[in-house]
Image (cartoon, rainbow, N blue to C red; front, side):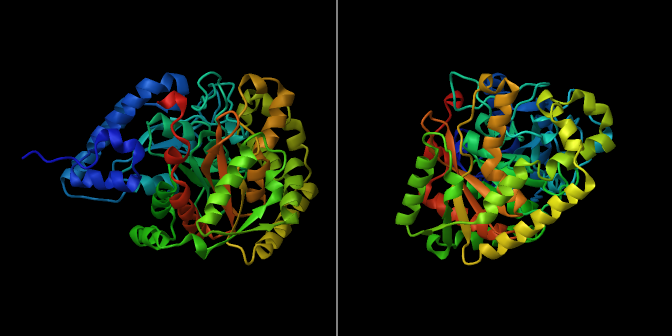
Length: 476
């Protein structure tokens, strides 16, 4: 009798990585079938969405077939064996050039793989390709004058920005060419594209994951993190990549699954709701109301450190002078190729004097320390991930409006980096123009496990992205 498959290839989009991994092991799916499915999705949607800087379907399929050969010998290296992963073109990936959003390829030094990529490679994850990034990751909207801007899949009529700087990451997930996307986050560059595209984005605690093998923007603030289709997939990625839990990933997942929504005390911070576009605040508040009815313990909080950190960020923070130093010392030959939106401000960035930079560093440390103490008694604080709807490309074509939208998009997310916290964005609504709205969940530094546990309890109530907000018009 012919065996009936419990998980068919057409059901991949609605299943977690954990379930898909189980289907591979039961023989219902193969790494090759998943790769072929991903390539077909790319062929169908890729020309419009343009998620990738480098895409090599032959390499993709060859890697997948090699993984199936390993499976055939009885070797099982973990949940990501055979799972397609897109990687931001800021990471070094063996066999792929690194452009970091520049018009020319960077030197071979930047092709070297760091610990994050190696952790996935160790489990034989299959690289689908390298996704577009804002040049040198310096931008919140996802635009790139050299290679083009991926299209936000939620608008059928206008080319809206996908969020940056991990511009192609969230798009690759909806495109169906990857099941996990690697990004980096300095002021929100994982969470902003996640919010704008209706995916999940995790900003890990600074120092938790190595940033070696990633082209830097700010050595003080840079973090690596995943974008996923649901919270469960974020937990799977964390369990494999995080050096503190990767030795027992199954135990880690089981611990988080036992959490109850009433276990946590959640604070709602009004400041994050200021100046929201229509439907953003309403969408988040509606989700919080649902959570409260399901047992979440939610109350109002107010932290002066948040507004103070935003004021520091608007002055240029630490990333601007650190970026200028990196360009002048290691990438001088690329200075002439800088995006006009960055080049126009470069003189200001490099003019920050040493005493001013040190003063900013010290002030930031003071604010971060105060915030850790202020959050005592609360497991997380919440608000909208981004206050604005994603603008169209034409709306940000002029420099002044680009900078205004860029600062507005990063206002909420940047406070997490400045205050040395960890956070996750999960989609909870569509705004007044039917663009995704992210719920921003923020926890203290080093509380990444608790953060994911909270997010998982929220997702059990609200549903995954596809369940909650549906499928983007350009991906139906």
